[in-house]
Image (cartoon, rainbow over all chains, first blue to last red):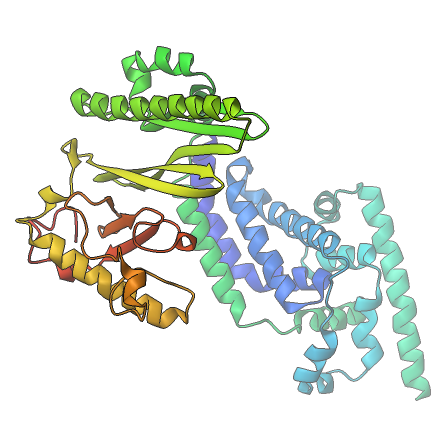
Length: 172
Length: 296
């Protein structure tokens, strides 16, 4: 029974990964802030997922199931590499100077990055990855109420920051 | 509000995607699929664990090994195991003699002959050791060690090559290596002469080894040394220089089907070189080989 699950799910999984790989990468990157580490996280996540594919009961849960794996892998990664963590944002910005031109405002650009991880992940998963709050809670292993309050707090923080940004722009 | 979120999302999405992502994803998927296909069923894992336990207990208890090898089905899983171990660990005397045993050969005569030989040699080594220790003790003590065991050099569908070593330690140590190579398909013991049409192989191999020795000496910058003519050693140091291999020189066949000739410590080189091996290029042997079946 379980092996049949794996067999049936494999095709779906491979397709899902191929289509969505950029999104997984972005999610991983939002934790690691480093290209190489994000790639590692994506790779580890796919490996882990393939090994436990037979434990996934229903293909419809694949999305949140896989996001959970990515999030956990990323957090594990951060934990393991805490001391060695390399943030190559500067290098990245240096290498891609054209990008800055896209943004009108540097503060707005960092608004998301400046959010603490616990708030940032809720925003990313809920708004950018279009996951239901219940799924977000499940992925992050927190209660639905916690997810809600974090999202609320995140919006509040963002709003303040965004307002500040707005204020600054108005003044400037 | 929504607009700000949109703006944030746009930024989130604008993190550059590295070119390597495609490659990483595809190769991981491919790997996973391969793994998946070969994935061991749960029951096999249990069996593997049992097999490990089984091997472990065989090594721990000779009595159990003997009992189990009498059960045909169970016995047939085993290939080469440690049959007996002699151990002595006293202050200045220590012996560690592992005796291999070949199982799962249908040719019982061959298996028995080899295993008898291994056991007899192991026993002889042990007895000798005990006797020498007795002598030494009578003379007021000394240091003595013997370490013997085996290593599987090649184990593929066709060939099983086992090397057994004996390291004698009396102050300095000497190492003796002996190989047995079995054709697993036909279940026969392969000897060096039977691989070749006539005696010419001795010359061909010897010449090639001399060449290899000289090349190695020249390339090693003085790190390597063999007792061979034309290596810059003074003639008087070459009293017992290497001239030719024995017709039954120790050898094994590598996993890639190459003939490897082995010399004991001190046989062709100073002690620091230890046991030395030479892989003979098949080109050199082509003319003399009976067939390219084992060596290719």
